[in-house]
Length: 123
Image (cartoon, rainbow, N blue to C red; front, side, top):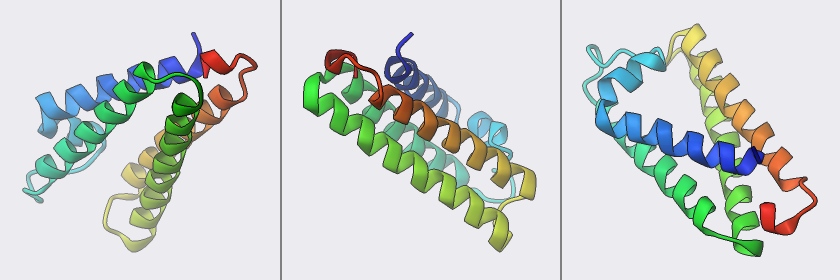
């Protein structure tokens, strides 16, 4: 499967899960909604963003699709940096921050791999 298609479908799945059950999604990210009641709200924001980027990328073609992949790479890089900073400033448990950083970094790699495909229509 093309890395861009896989990443887009993954975004949609994670986003849908975050909207459907934000508390469960937050717990999967090792966050504690019981001690921070704003977590489900922020998880839904994250989910909506992921669905929007995933669907838009799947529907786009040519240069528009490439630009959406680049946007996704930038968003994922920001997410990785945020996970790293959350670990450093103590706003998340170390394991949670490391996991979020690793997942977001993996998404950056998948996006970059998708940009390297030779067929412009496949990107």
